[in-house]
Image 1 (cartoon, rainbow, N blue to C red):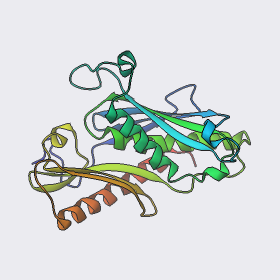
Image 2 (cartoon, rainbow, N blue to C red; image 1 turned 90 degrees about the horizontal axis):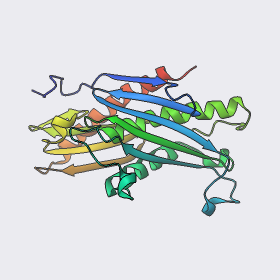
Image 3 (cartoon, rainbow, N blue to C red; image 1 turned 90 degrees about the vertical axis):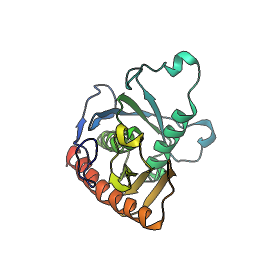
Image 4 (cartoon, helix red, strand yellow; image 1 turned 60 degrees about the horizontal axis):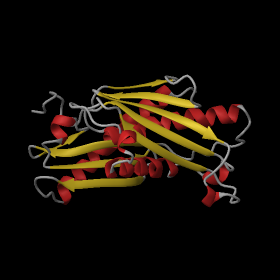
Length: 238
């Protein structure tokens, strides 16, 4: 029995609320169970120095957690003067995941930054960030097209992410914190709606797993992201 009472292949309740941030070009508040992440997309009419003159755009991400997003208060990283290795790793993952579904040659020299701020954490924050950031990115691009800044939609695919793991010997979908902290193995799958794999992060925590177990996790992830793609599409206009 899972701690939440869910079936092995059942997602947590998911909702995506757009327009939450009044000033950002695109925003989405994504809720997956008790995990809540605010994703905002901001547009700048320039690119980093290493890309100037190439005629391509840039898509990047930043990630952070509020001090009481977790059970005990965490220090603000700004107060410590540097980001943790975990934060840097996650925001790089988010950026890679979104760039994989964007043709940056169609952007011109603009930058879209996705800020993913975790309001409440109960497992799967990086996956919720990627899934919500895609919606925020789409909304920002739509606004740019309405203003005729972009002639063509540079988004060439759809991306979502989900965690899976082996809990008490059983492959399960969408780990919450109670399962993630006790899992035999866990994995994050970043997949496209076209069936492509962008990235898989898989780790044996308490016990190794074999090919059959990995195949079961991948099958769960594909079924889970199919539901996330539907939720993304329902949140987006048109």
